[in-house]
Length: 122
Image (cartoon, rainbow, N blue to C red; front, side, top):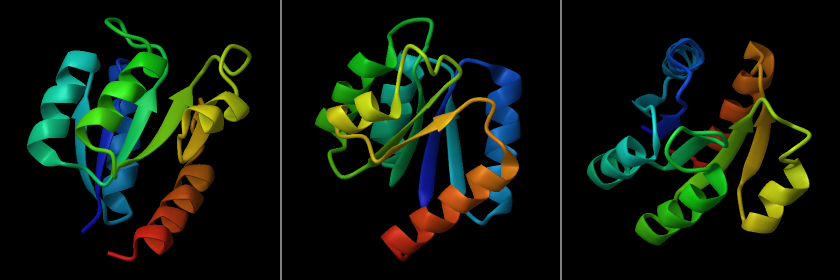
């Protein structure tokens, strides 16, 4: 089963997205900040990370590099509500697998999860 780590400090958004991911048949773990993310990353070894750009303790750009150091094989998808500050082009420059704009719509999320299943074939 594909394991996804969802990192978002907005509890309501994180919990709703986690339920949707789980409903699509993925194993899900969550973190609310960078410190929790790094701990869960080491313990759970996720295949995919959905990473919010704006976290209270570290921005997504910097956390992205820490994640890659710990788990180079994990696919990282940025999620953000501040699209004007962070673009899909910037995400790709960093080496991210993709980018999602908040609010994350169910149909878009499900399409992305289908793509991930196909890509990882687990």
